[in-house]
Length: 289
Image (tube, rainbow, N blue to C red; front, top):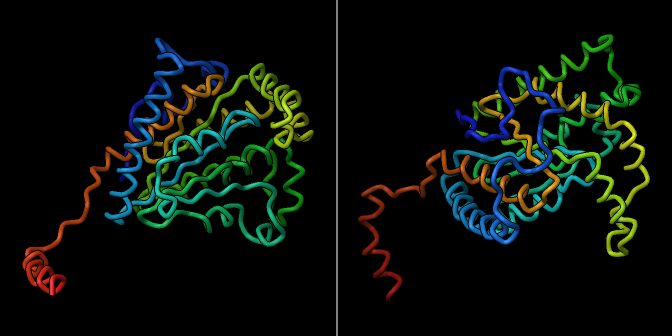
């Protein structure tokens, strides 16, 4: 079963993670923007090769989960990191307000329908974790979920976090490599990005007034993130709390973690048996007729 690669941004597996202590800007000596772009380009090339090997081997699937506050850079990070990957081997899904059909199932059902097959990379832009984030901040959303026996108080969040851990353990046992990224943007940086959406015409389409409403619940979201990260970061389904105030650094860091994780699998192209190879001369002869 896959085991998490080390990183200064790896969320501990035994709790103790504090959102207030998690950096939103890079730690230590950081290359300049030009160097970071070069590093990203190199890792994107590596990922293209690794994805081809993943597809050919057909033993593992990869699930990349991205969670963040609005304007943290989820879309651009996914686009940048996977820009070199064959589209046939990658699929991206976004999860927003659940449909009536989805509400007729358990809270994990809609994301379970979108899990990647073996040989493919799946990306969740928001995910099942919204059920312990947005729904926890807005518990009135539970009224629409038709729960027959809703646990009182914090017990429902404990149960959902437990269900998520069990679900991810099952996936990992069956060959899914799960990498989860919390893009940790600061309140001040989010404000600047929202302002740029108002000030720059080409970004107007990105702005939604509802984003400002959610911003007013910042502290509640941070509390929910802290509980979620501590409860669900495991060796086989790790969380990485990535500083998101510097987009170039964030993208390069995510790409490196994904590449290192795939490299750790020792992916190889399948080898033909000697019997199959022995027929190559026959095949060449037929092609040259």
